[in-house]
Length: 429
Image (cartoon, rainbow, N blue to C red; front, side):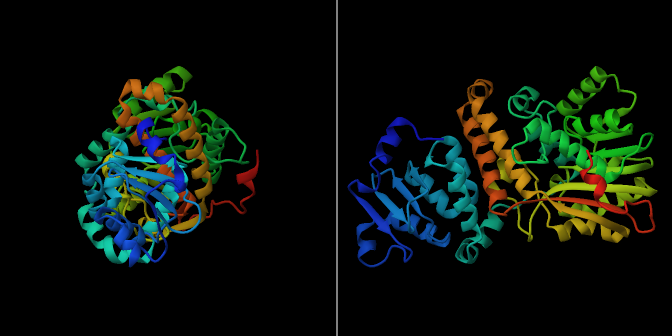
């Protein structure tokens, strides 16, 4: 996460070095403005719209500026004028691109730096000056059937061997559930799957449908440990192939069927509907259709469960994440999630927020990713390593600052009385 040797040598002299200008909360004005180049004044103005975070930045021309009050959490090097101008026009998108290609270097704790950025994105000045332009520049594409398949292929079909380097042994790529903060990632992912199954009250002989099954871990868990017959949908070819092979290896291929198709084409009747980490890819424009699908396939006494990254207010996905990592991604607010259920008159039984659990999950992933970065570089290139480092670190920062939430919602039909009397069963081992 550190700059290369040449750039680091420029940063290391610290705040005692010659040519450093201190720009306080008032921004670059008066005598200070006279001491700054036009480039630095522009960048200080941008940081002022973020609430003037405590930051040390250095430009390609050797100019060094400290903003905010207190000790800077990180030093930032901007390699050229083009990068600076792109940041001024569309910081949400171009910061990530510039970090990926090495035009921006961060010396210090990358997660703490990104937490400052996420807090800055909520600053009133940023909304006033840049939010409208940012929304227009970073328009999200709708999740049609064809677009959804391409979006999923972009992220999930880049190679199972890559994900094996840093996920847990079950290949679970969603938020874990940590009964204690010191639990291992492997134990926390199994605990998450048990947590889901307990919430649904799964019983041997029942049927379940999973929309968006990843590499099949939860479907296999429901079939092997809870005696449920599972039908699982996914449009990622590599994930489906992996899941089918795992089912054969476990000898339970007769109890779980993995279907390479869109959830919208599901049919039949099931005791339980489950979706973990799929709703983020659905798009608000398709929520009504998802509600109709659930209503069509859920039995009269059936239960449903949705686990999704979310927001506390309606905001589009970070532009760089949406364009470079998760095309079509759109985390809903809790209110937006409920628009799937309310028109179908489903009754919400339980809501839980696991935001801090996702931050801890991501910290495990980032450590494992960094431990495997040489192998990742050999598979792809240095730009890919930097891109995914930024994605994982930025996700930690987003959950730490509350920019992202993690909702689990359990529901059933309004007339169903086959629901748990208390929540005691969730914590029985």
